[in-house]
Length: 381
Ligand SMILES: Cc1ncc(COP(=O)(O)O)c(C=O)c1O
Image (cartoon, protein in one colour):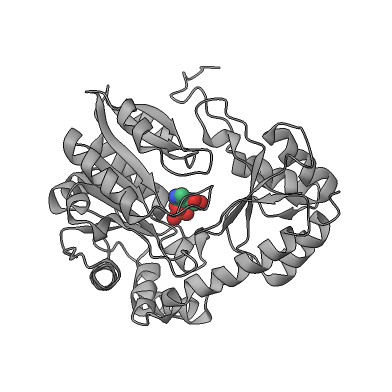
């Protein structure tokens, strides 16, 4: 049999797939992988079905259907005060993941470095490597703040871009205005691009506001802003998102997009466009997830797991040092098999061997699911 040399020698099955499999094998409640266990708004489903019945089933425009790009431009203007031209500056993608992948392919040249703030979502480093570039991991501080001095120290003449992720998976931290100012100063001083993963843009709690790169004109001018309708509207399986970037960056993005994905399901796009006309679903999202966060945290407070701050996303990170001395991967497997609740270890989100005895739970679940998981976790002594 012929064999193929791998382009990603370090890559195996992702930790999310591993933990979901383990959860299935042991009948555990899956608070590992980040997806809701409740359905989307029936109005959204009906809008998509209607678009399909209306015959929107053939290739739409490469950049995405006009009503969705227009609706998104209006939403970005309303949320962040930045005018993106729907014709030239917004592209609809097959999920945030493809937006990230294509942005990294077009912004990076072979031999470049790209800075990742670690722990970092697992799709960034492989995409950087496939572009012929090298990821450079910069660990966050012990309380999961971005260490801007460490970022500055990691920059070399090879550094081409930085990937920002706020609200941050897996820590649940949210960057503030001072973070964005630091980033803008660094990006301008070193002429860097920014790929800004903002798929959790509407999951920010306690009245804080999401600091999108789109709020900061100097950053918006050099950033690919990546979003995900899947995350915002509880339809992760639809894999639909967007990239907003200045015209020159969007043009480079579309050059690659047209030969890889080309275009995205038109009925889903049109259904989303109709659904976006009502801002209530995304305006209500912070309160919706904050209630779940509070319920979950209140239940966890009755366990020996130590709660870390959760300012945004639908992830709650805990320190399990009081329960076990196992390393994170083993602790996650133990919790799944013995306690019946699956979580995600943070160690795989680092390029270096960093072990803090931290696990991440996803609370995008029905109350009954959260309560059952809490009942099991409360058995931890
Ligand atoms: C930080 C982050 N970025 C991107 C994605 C992927 O988004 P999508 O499902 O729209 O591809 C996820 C999904 O878990 C994520 O957590």
